Length: 153
Ligand SMILES: [Zn+2]
Image 1 (cartoon, rainbow, N blue to C red):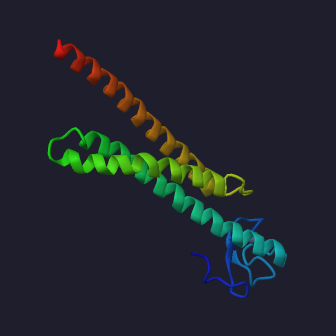
Image 2 (image 1 turned 90 degrees about the vertical axis):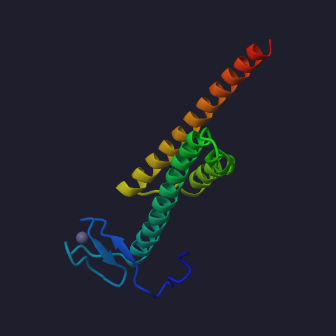
């Protein structure tokens, strides 16, 4: 992932004063002129990369949570259903694993970045979608069992 970026290469980060994007080779912000501390700049640049991967991972979890919901509804369709069920069972485990991994990896991140807050919200939305599908699945399974029980009589 970020292995190709060495300490010597310039890294992009947001100026702590004006929030414009500048890089770690600069001693002063080219937008507002505030002096840039090399260590703080490096930390900010690293944070920037972590925030970027947090956004990427959160977006990925949200897409898979939506696919999880879609697979559930497709699983009711004949023929297509078998394939969708397989995907559903896989995502039943993958989505919560991704969400837990996200929270373990990124929840302690100290940043005022709006993208990070957005990523956090996306993981919550993904968790809600996953939980909602589980509730629907549970209710319908119970109803189906009751219907089958009555039909056997
Ligand atoms: Zn600035």
